[in-house]
Image 1 (cartoon, rainbow, N blue to C red):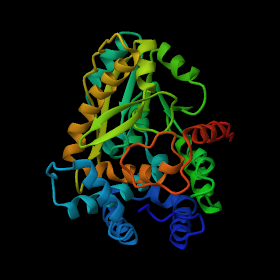
Image 2: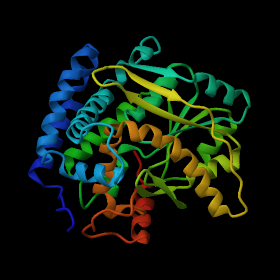
Image 3: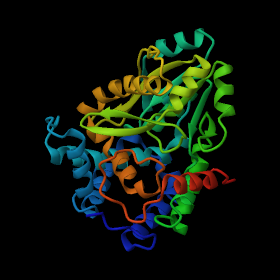
Image 4: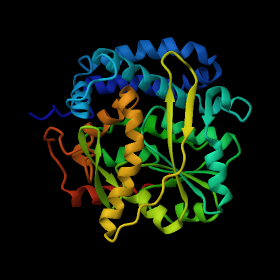
Length: 354
């Protein structure tokens, strides 16, 4: 049975969006100016409330079960689900604190390990692809590297684009206002934003200029796709990172952002670069190189699934508008767009202008 469709006028959704709007507008300056240590208990409380409103995380529990299959969980299911909602709330609060992050305090906010891999990659003169998943506070790669003085670029979707993509299933005026404010905060970070739904000329340009390019392997954009194993599931992922790697020769650095339970400090870990694996078939070459990255990613995912479950839940809920749903084993979605319809919607969303 498919999950019930959540309409933009759903009372729970409107209540959540009204609360979010209050945080992003009158509340943002207050959040940014207060000590970091007070937000851990707030995030715990907020996460627990969000979990209760989500029927104790029923959909998230299904995602967790599908992800692990017969493999043992790294912690009790209730603990994982609780941690997932609390972590998601803390990461959302972190966005509100972007304006408080500076070169002087960024290492207190996010400690970076493995900078030697980035420095070595840039010394080769072909740029570096910081390849991440939507794990933990993945957005912290932007202020962490930008405030440390690295020329940083981020290939992603501007938040307001999601209002266009989900115009008939999620969007309402409150959410549009939240997304617009989030975009305004992101634009104050020391990073150049590149719209993933438009031409990638700027992505190639920044690598030619020997700069760093942040890119998520598990986003919904792209034109070419391949399948990889992600623990017990089969995932559809874009070949966009491989295309950039193949055409530029830039180093691809698997990178993770995580936070220990109870800490108010994130950790960003940049790992040694992937080695290119050639194959006579272009399609198979795409697959094996993406699988090599996902294998690295899964070592983190298997130990801390709570850091990824909120993203998995989001992709489950937008599956009807995805060109390629992240996983093939979702419940059947209502009003599922064809790949052609979904691609046309992405194209039109990519025409959004500020």
